Image 1 (spheres, rainbow, N blue to C red):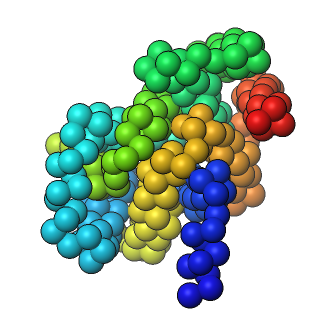
Image 2: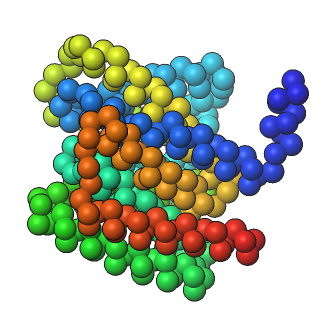
Image 3: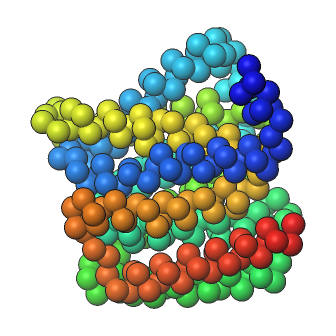
Length: 292
């Protein structure tokens, strides 16, 4: 009872920040689980869609009962946009991880806050200030630097999909931000079903053997189902760009998991470009929070 009261007493800023932080901490070992799995790419995409779908869908039915469908239909145009972007990012993230270094994918995703700022200025009439514009330019230069390195070593395809994932996250966050009064979690649930359905056209095997019997369900619930609910709710309380800032933690911690467990080391160029991106966004965030 006291805990419920303490949660209600939190400000919108505190609620949104807490939700985003917890979500990203659950996500951090996700890339490692993808690397440890023996499933083919589309097998992973299928299970990362179908398991979270049933997990969250039944949970939502228990909470909302048949109102789940009412909430879904009431999400309207925003819901459709979120279903599409959510589905795309879920697919491109896995394919990106499978085609480049984990660090490269996560560095690309770290650009989501800057992309959110650009999209926010276009669609939400929230023009970025001078500091944000400078941060966007620096981030863009760092991305080009990493892409150039990836061209040389053959990781360009994976890096591009990592950037597409970041763009999808930015569009999704802006969509949620522009629909504050709407609950888009049901739309995200439908998005997971779309992901699984799309993977059916390409999947080679449904069989889970050996360590995949443990790794895949754990990954799908711990790193996918729980975080996607929290990340969908968070932008209702704080700006979309601020939610995406928490993904910087994944950019830092995710590659550490992979490096410690399976000794996958990013290139020097990725470390340099990633350090520039993370430092730029961190300084930008600090200055913005101090101003507020």
